[in-house]
Every structure is written in structure tokens, then in C-alpha cells.
Length: 127
Image (tube, rainbow, N blue to C red; front, top):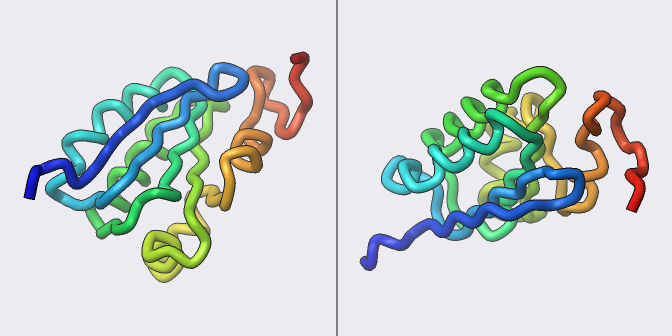
């Protein structure tokens, strides 16, 4: 194994929202590479965590997602994007995480559902 079981990419979406994309496997061995960037982003802006390219998640990965969600302050939020029918979706739904974390099947829907700077949800932004 080359040790690159997880790829983490941080980019900016609309309204200054960060998108943290994870690809590969999220487990105890790969958490150190994603925890710091994710927690850093949720500490100062709204974040979409895109798990649609994630092939595996375990309970330690779920724990980090919950930790990041709880770290979002004020009206800042964290939404999660999953691939329908994936192992990730099955695990999150079986664990009941879908009742605690906002889950979406595409980035656009997740972005639209985030509150803007005034806490309003779904408002169109000037473009």
C-alpha cells in the first residue's frame, strides 16, 4: 500500500462556502489527514463535506464528521454530500446519522440549503 488511501481537497464554492472533498477510505488510519483541514474550515465558514467519492467509512470517520458538525459556530453550518447507494450512505443511514447531519445527494442542493450571512436559507445571492 502506498499510504494514499484518502485524498482531501479544499475549494471554495459560492458565498465563500468551503467544500472539503474526500476520496478513498475514511477510517482510523486516514483521519489525521482530513481532521485538521475540516475542523479549520468549519471554525470560520460554512462547509460542504463532499463524500460522494468516498468508498468506505467506519465509526471513527463518522465520529470526526459529528465533531466537525458540532464545531460549527453560530449560524455557520456543515452539510454533507453522499453518493446514493454507496457504502457511505448505507452506513450513515444504518447508524442514524442521517437524522443528525444534513445529507444531500449533490453539492448544489447542499449549497442552496446553507444559510447566508443573515441566517436565511435558500435565498438567491446577487451574481
